[in-house]
Amino acid sequence: MSEELFNDASWLIASIMRGLMTFPEDIEGVHDVLTRIAEQDLSAENFSPPQPQRLPGCRHLPEAVTAGVIVSMDLCHAIATVEDQLHWTNGDVYTTESLDQMGFNENAAFAEIIGTSGLFTGDDFRMGLMLLGPGLHYIDHYHAAPELYWLLTGPIEYSRSQGQFKQVGTASTLWNKPNEVHAMKVGERPLLAVWAWANDVNKLPVLLSA
Image (cartoon, one colour):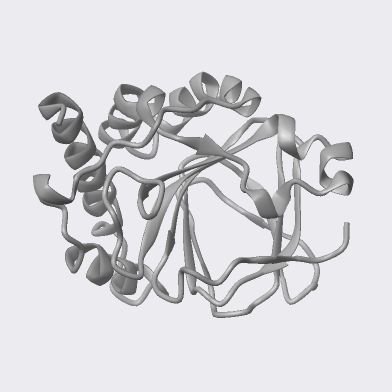
């Protein structure tokens, strides 16, 4: 085990928790995710570094991390320290031809911090980072897991239940209820966000037609 990487991973998770703790208790989903993080085994015995993997979309990380400093300098410093040790993927469910034509696979990257491909194995819980390139449209999709996004950059446009897109600002949180259809459109700069699935994490998301 790399003690340095374990310490960096612990710092990353602690930074996320400190950031979420600054939100009022009535912000939907934040308390649920904080509770679930606290229930995870974050000990050295449950630490298992993934095989590092980078994707073309990771080229947006420097700009996104720099922009995210205004939301949390501590968290963005932690991300910059550990990002090259993470297993970045755009997920098998998102390798459809239609998404590829939209530039998704060249401009999107997801990395788990807690979860099956993360730094710590999760107990029916996943949490990680999402990176989407400028102008990218993350089309309608849904999943059984309730999901929290914490936007470290922005603004973006967000849609629920195939409704109208509405602007959501930097530092905002978004809570998706189980099986709630949602989509987003990224603005002029990359989107960097923390995401978390609170439970039912083993059921794959369903992507609607592009």
